[in-house]
Image 1 (cartoon, rainbow, N blue to C red):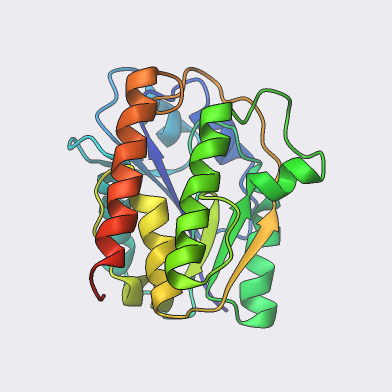
Image 2 (tube, one colour):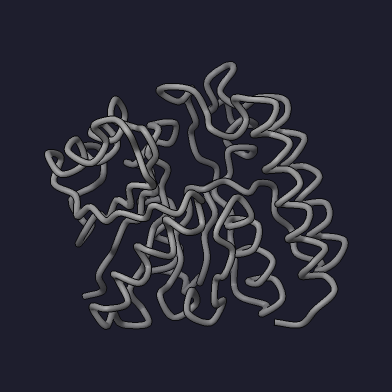
Amino acid sequence: MRNIFVIIPAYNEEEAIGKVIKDIPDIVTEVVVTDNGSDDNTIQAAKNAGATVLTENEKGYGAACLKAMEYIYSKNPDTEDIIVFLDGDYSDFPVEMFDLINPIVNNNYELVIGSRILGKKFGKAESGSLLPQAIFGNWLSVFLIRLFWNYEFTDLGPFRAIKVGALRKINMEDRNFGWTVEMQIKAAKLKMKCLEVPVSYRKRIGKSKVTGTISGTFKAGIIILYTIFHNALKKI
């Protein structure tokens, strides 16, 4: 029986993190929260909810994810084990994890992305949950991925599941906001078996550190575009 690990990078999510962990299905082997230098009660809230909590003081979404991956790899997981990435702001619906995991277990997919854009088409996105700048940024990014690597994605959504073996092959490096797009680009370059499934989405608890501010949106956009063009000019 394969293990399922959940990685949640978190920064100042004390109001949301307990709700996220509580809604994660019982099929999960271990929930790993990486606190990214919070100055609130995120760490204790995550521990109280039953998660393993790590600390990564280097600010960056990717840095927090890499910290958790290092911890999971130290357990010598099987290549068929699954890692699910999930945000700690309660914008995703953890119970929909089954929709991401089942294609891997039953149809041997290597990477499954929870697409908020597809979810929006099916009326699964709460009004105002996907901001215009996020929609445009996703559209531009997936357009460039299709242009350079002929792979069809609709979203860079953080809610995703991947086989441990596939994640090792991808060799993630980004330590900031280029994390999700790097994973999809490298999966495309490696011609991995990928799938998108529609997922629900709601307004996050608290203010977004990325799309919630002009500076955050601009910084994330620059990093994502740099990641795309940098990978377009080199081989893995």
